[in-house]
Each structure stands twice: as C-alpha cells, then as structure tokens.
Length: 314
Image 1 (cartoon, rainbow, N blue to C red):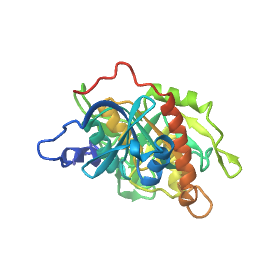
Image 2 (image 1 turned 30 degrees about the horizontal axis):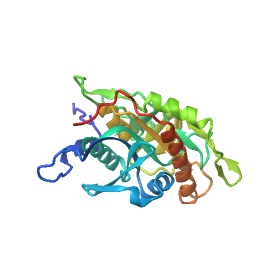
Image 3 (image 1 turned 45 degrees about the vertical axis):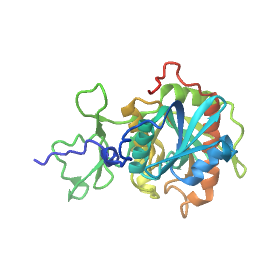
C-alpha cells in the first residue's frame, strides 16, 4: 500500500530553504518587541498604513529576502507592517521570516476575502476564531457514478466534492512527540474577545445605502485557489460552516500556532466566491472591503495591550 506523507503544507517545508545573507542566518534585526501587521497585496496594506502612519517619515524600512518591513512607533507601541504576498506558500514563509528576524509579540492580518456564509454580503467584515484548509485533500478515481476508490488510511471525515476528499493537515510543534491531524488553527482567544468588544462600538460602515456587518467568531478557510464557483462555495459552507474563503490565512494561523505566537486575522468581504448573480464582484468591492477590514483592525490595535509576560528576544 502506498503511504501518504502529506504531513505539512509545502509552505512550511520551504521555510528551511529561504536564503539569508552570509553569517546572518536568523540574526535578529531588532530586539525591540513589536506587533506584526500584515496584508497580502498593496491595496490592503496601504489602507491600514494610511490610517495608522500617515507620515512616511516616521517609517523605518528594512528589506530581507526581498520583503520590505516598515517599522513605526505609534501610541507607545512598535508596529511592523509588511506584505506577505498572495498564496499559502508566500504567507507561511513571510510570517515565519518575521517571527525569526524580529521580536514579534503578536501577529495581525488585514485583507479581503470571498464570502461563503450566505448571511454575509460584500463590505461585511469577519474575524474568525479559527482557520482551516479546504484544499488539504485527496484526489480519487471514480469507480462508478458517485463512488470512489478510498485508500485504507484515508479517514473519510468529511463529505467529498466530486473526486476531491478533504482531510486535516498533519503538523507538529515544540513539546509534541509526533505529527497529528489538526482540523483547525485558532486565533488567539484573548484577541477574539477584544475584537468582539471593539465591534460593539465601531463607527458605521456602509456599502451604498447598506450598513456593513462585523462578525467575530466562527470559521474561515484557505486554499491555493481563487474560488468563484457556486457549487464549491455551497460545499465549503456545508462542510466547514465557513464564513469566508481566502488564500493565506490558514497558513498564517498555522505558523503562529507552531511558534506559539498570538494571531488575529480580519477579512473584509469583497465578493461571494461564486455565490453572486453574474460576474465576480471582487474588483467592484475591493477598496470598500479593504478599508472596512483596515478600520476594524485599527480599532482593535488601538485597544490592544501586549501580554505583560511576553518575552523579549536577546
């Protein structure tokens, strides 16, 4: 029997091969504790930097492996702004690089996503309490209509979508002795609770004449695809009870879980991942979704206080 060795996403495997300057492998850039604030592409990062650091002169720029990190002191806290790049691999590598080279006390992310929960609309904001992979999967041969050749080792935990049979990722971290299937990677409970408190007093956000909602809690899912398919969206919602779908968050949450670093990810919904009538609306609602996500995260960061016991790197 052929064994399955998909114990880690490719993103985590690649972390060991990230190039570093000679003699500076894993050397910390700064010992100062900081809060990492990330986004996957420029429009998302620009939205929050404009709200938090309107004066570019206050930004210290450091480039490592092609990634530019912007450090800034704001209201007594040191922030580290940077782009992860799109996709699970980029997100995992960028997050791990920041944790390795800076004294990151917590990780926050702002960006857009496709809405999966039918209760939500473009412009709404979700702050999931956990993140899963929808694309950690097994592709199987169809032996007869609707029947598939299931390997003996496959747990068959979730309903399939055609030939694709979802599975949990297998991971390990410090203090554990063996790889184990992990269905979801949590956001920090304290940060989710803070987000709920902040959400109750947010200024009104609208798309046209419709007021935008902010939902804290629930599940988000990530994969290697841009989803614009109504049937797949229905399957994702039915299988994972997901509120949103994107291409980075689960990898970020996994890296933070493995490094035992608190994280919180905020997503503004730019489209319905295929659930709309007609063409995908991401471009139409991109800026509204990015701005709403950034505004919510800014308010969370203003209320956030790092844990007193957070260690300082030498």
